[in-house]
Image (cartoon, rainbow, N blue to C red):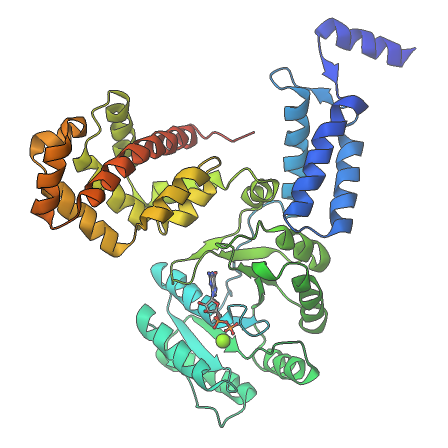
Length: 439
Ligand code: GDP
Ligand code: MG
C-alpha cells in the first residue's frame, strides 16, 4: 500500500522513473563507447551492470530527459571509478620530497622527470634530477639535456656506479644544493624482469621515496594492465602517470589500470614537450572515455593563456561580423600558445572536420610566417573586409608577399573556417565562466 501511495504522490508531483525500456539503448551505447575506448571487457560489463542497478527506478529530474539522466549517472559512476577527485603529488613535511619514476622502457619516465621538474620549478621549487638509469648510454645525456632546458641540476655518477649508490648519494647532493625535491629517473626494460624489480626495490629501501610513480603508455592499451599490476605488487606504487594521451587512445586503459591497481592517476602526458604534463581530472577523463571531448581541459587552457575578457570581446566582434584578418593573426598567435592545434581541436566535439582542414593546410611555424606575410601585404581595408579581395587583388597580394595565389586563397578559406572555430570556442569559454558543466 505504501508503495502505491508513494507512486501516487510521484504522479501527483509529475515526476517519472527510469524504466527498463529507457535504459536499453543508452546502456548499449555506453558499453560500446567503453569497449571502443579500449576498456577491458570485464570492467565494461561490470560497469554497465552497476549502472543498470542504480538507474533502474531512479527519479528523472524535471529538466532532463531519461537518457540525459542515465548519462548523468554514467558520468558520475565513471568519474568515481577513475578516482573521484584529483589526486595531488605528496609533499614531504620535511624536505626533500623524494619522487621515483618507474616503468617499462619507452613509456616516458625520463620525459616525465623533465616535465615534473618544469612544473615544480614554475611553482618555485628547486628539484634535483637523478640519473639512475645507467644501462642505456643515452639515458644520462637525455636527462642532462632536460635538466639544462629546465634549468635545474642533474646528479649523475656516470654508468659505473650502481643505481642504488647513486640514489643514496643524491640525498647528500640535494642537501648540499639546498634542493627541496629529488626526482629519480630509473631504468626500464622492454618486459618486466626480476633483476630490474630487485634494483628498484633496493632503491626504494635506500631512499624511502614519498612517491613511486609508474609511467603507463596509454597507447599500449590492455598490456599496460598486467604491467601495472606487477609493479604495484612488487613496489607499492603511490600513483600513475598516463603518458601519450595526446595520441589517438581514448583512455580506456586508464580506467582498467586504475581499477586493477587501485592507484590514483596523478598526471597525464599530453605531448613530448616539457609543458605537456597535466593534472589528472577524473571527471574529464570520464567524458573523454565516453567520447564527449575533453572540453573542460580545453577551457582551462584557454583561461591560462588568454584573457577571458579579450576572448569575449572577440566574440562580440564575430557576432557583429567585425572579426578581421588583423585579429585572426592575433588569435592564431594565441592558439599557438595553447599548444598543438591538433590536440586542441581533438578536444572539441565536432571539430574533427576543421582539424583535418588545418592539418591539410599544415599550420606550423613556417606556415604561420607565411600567413603573417600575406596578411601584412594586404591593405588595411582588405584586412577589415576580406570579402572585397577579388581575383586581381589576390594576385597583387601574392606578389607582394612572395606567395602563390593559391596560398592567398587558402588563407582566406582558413580565415573563414577559423571564424567558425572561434565562435565555437568562445561559446565554451563563456559557458566555463558561468561555472557550467556539460551534463
Ligand atoms: P623512458 O624509456 O621511459 O625513459 O621513456 P622516454 O622518456 O625516453 O620517452 C620515450 C619516448 O616517448 C620519447 O620519444 C618521448 O618523447 C615520448 N613521450 C614521452 N611522453 C610522451 C607523451 O606524453 N606524449 C607523446 N606524444 N610522447 C611522449
Ligand atoms: Mg629513460
